[in-house]
Image 1: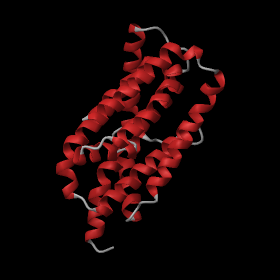
Image 2 (image 1 turned 120 degrees about the horizontal axis):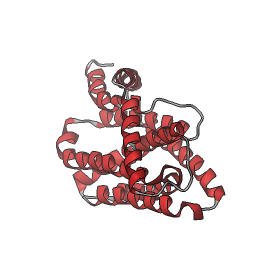
Image 3 (image 1 turned 90 degrees about the vertical axis):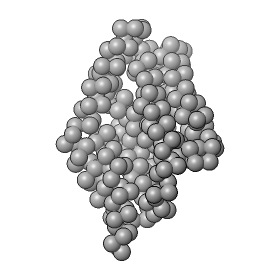
Length: 238
């Protein structure tokens, strides 16, 4: 399980580097790199969406999933956990290199949870390594996650490094479950799963760039629904 370990380590190391040495990073990089990361997220989202096989199934899962996520207050739950994490870390360490408001902290933290934990590269990378033993995709993701974590940790502090915990758990679950999950899927289901993840990545990119404040955490249940709905849609002959 090389990929999940390396990927989580990249976030921890990047977060620590940004929190400890953020003052030494030029201001232009601090201001402009987050926009690049948002643009990359948008690009990845578009590349995943174009793989769609059953567009109505993806749209339906996005709508139902978002309704469920909003009714269950997933975004508020992540905000609560982020606030608790922030409080604990600040008691154990010095403040971040650059302070931000509570609202800005929460918005950035939630966006990064989505970006790190449920990106298509991470999900398919973990499943691919679980099936074939090849960690290449997750290693590539690690190269991207390290500088991302470093830049955002300048304002979020060491709290950002804690995102490595849910990311590792998700990737480990996919790694060990891949051998059981993939035989139950087909090409169309995987493509629609990728497209649903792409919608969330696209929304995350817009949120990071501060274009539109999408409820990205509330959209997460769509990832659970999309493959069953895709299979049902195909089975009905549409």
